[in-house]
Length: 197
Image (tube, rainbow, N blue to C red; front, side, top):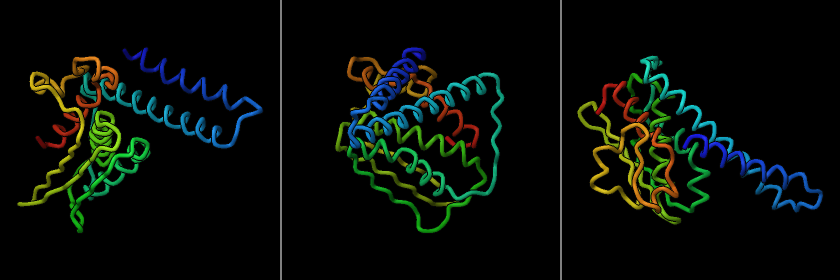
């Protein structure tokens, strides 16, 4: 699965490079090819980062770099990362965050990774023009971040295993859009490392 995922992205990059080498290419087509290369490159980097993190978690080498941080910043950075995909699919992103900082001791990079994964999955499994509400609630010195979408949903029998490593939903429609089942497992691991549930 990993080889297939990498090969398909490399094939898309190769096709775009060949297109860019044509002396007859029009400016809009050139911009499209350059954007495709950038997009596929970032997705490959995200996949390779996930694979490295999985290997680290399996041998207990992940260590959090805790610092005093504003949780809103991690969410906004994640939104910035996924925004090109959200725009491409014409999703409507509704963000409701507190107006004041939400301080905690955490690893901002790992928390961004959690939020990027959740947003990217919501974007991928939601049909064009869907809604992606993001909300944070705070009470009693605790914060809860809620991601929702108007996507295809998860079958009831798959819910207990959704955060298992390499777990994927069954069915042709899900397989067409599915990844490797790495991201959700990392989300679960990083949330646990932060002492949350």
